[in-house]
Length: 207
Image (cartoon, rainbow, N blue to C red):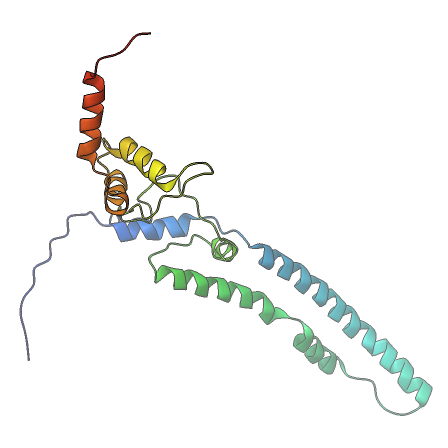
């Protein structure tokens, strides 16, 4: 059996922690119905009217049939009400909401905050994601892996131009371009600096 003591110091005021702010953000978000929920509500309303009309007209039709045939009995009001309760699709309306809540909970397990079921539903149709800044979902370790030249330009020429343009770039991306050009094509930044210095010191000829 293990036992020990732990001291915890809370530095935030009640209601001002990160978790409290996230809860307030979700609670304050305006609930937006998804297109599927809107279509489902319209379908439920239409089916309810159809079933209600069918149950209401069932009693006079059954009474007419009984009087014409001279046998049998018309259904009672309790039977018609029970039939209407069984026919009305009330449970379908809550099914889609339950699916949306389950989707929000599932993405929450991957540290993604979904503001509504509409966001979860729309994300299923996304195949390309554009971000307005770097570092949103990356960890800053992007590296150059290949030079892809346009028509009329060789790989070596592209590597030379890319290395020259990245010599002064101190970002991980810029350094990776220089390293890739060095490893794949044997280009060295020092050679380019010496070549540039030599070309600037060479005498000019005049026609």
